[in-house]
Length: 358
Image 1 (cartoon, rainbow, N blue to C red):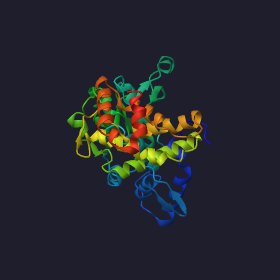
Image 2: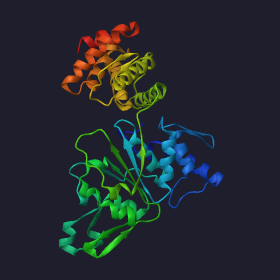
Image 3: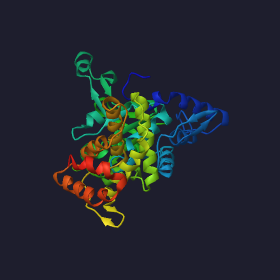
Image 4: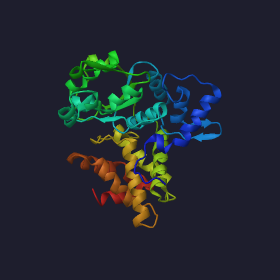
């Protein structure tokens, strides 16, 4: 068992990645320059399968075509933008792609309103400049700089959180495959294998739209919330089981039933419809990631406080925390309990638990 809270994908799945490299060698699969594994192997790493007798676990669900398009994009000189609502696994997919291709998913820039051009491109070691002058040894390399030098995949999380003028600093890198260093009258040329994966979501307030010049440098792959209930249940079930194993807590016997219940609640509130009943939609996204959070909290609460039994009260506590984000959400959720859950005998325990806290 690792002592790290969140191991990098290349560490967590090291055995699978090694097996896929051997599988590539055995079948002479063609690989783009500097890729550690072939596009076929990267696809299998993410969507699951078998490699020379080793079972490769599926790690991403519900968007097989989009995953293949993303990998195909990265075989070209085009950067990749994973775009869509929060909770659709954009960050997970970006990490898996970088780990599968480069064996290094940690060349990461986290985009925020305070991200500066220096944090994106390069900074200076001012002590070195004062003592030894301005030379290459004084350059503090950012993840993007290192990825360019070493021919690896760099990642930018929440690209549209970065101010627009700072975003545009990427244009030269993506179009000319170089980074000017005017202070040294030189440039950094991207090694073969370099590329960039960025993520952005379309729901947050206060984001900075990409300029047309920058957006043209990306191939955009849109990731949506699961279109069908069974896929969403599968996503939640997979991750809840993984997290229980990581936390070394047992899954209560009624976990699968509660997962189906939570996913149904989320999908009805998200759609604003339960059967023929029209509903108001809450402000929350109610994504699979949030359903996973509700179930993970409930499973851990059951393990530590209830002797392993998963109760309606634990599910209700998690649902309230996720659904009720704005003042009006409480009224919307109460209305759902009155008009929908009340009519379902199998949901009576959850209805009572929610009434006690809403």
